[in-house]
Length: 153
Image 1 (cartoon, rainbow, N blue to C red):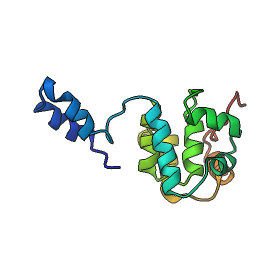
Image 2: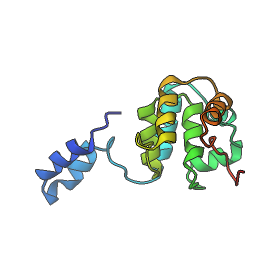
Image 3: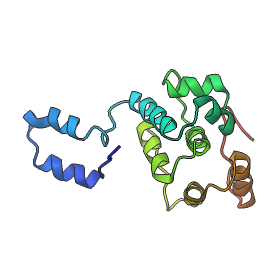
């Protein structure tokens, strides 16, 4: 996977003619967010690279398997970014892999100017234990824990 930055893509587009749009798309397919199926493909490819099964990821993320499979297959959609963060963390994704997964899912990336997001960025860089440990750290630092599906207190 060879993702280009938005700035690099914009430079290419400034010299691209309408007739070359198909070539632009094929040349930059790793960088373009085309549809939600790209999320599914991206996640499965990273799971394969990291030699981890979906079942293991859902167990580590403390997400019901059936729900997790439906999210990855795009049969269901969540508006809770924490669910995607749980999956990415449980799969051992790096911060950049997580940011890309969020983009592909159509969710905002973690943002360094938001305290909780900044704290989560450090967590993704250091990977201090499992989801329970992450939630304990979040709680200890007066942040909301990573939510699971459904309403939480």
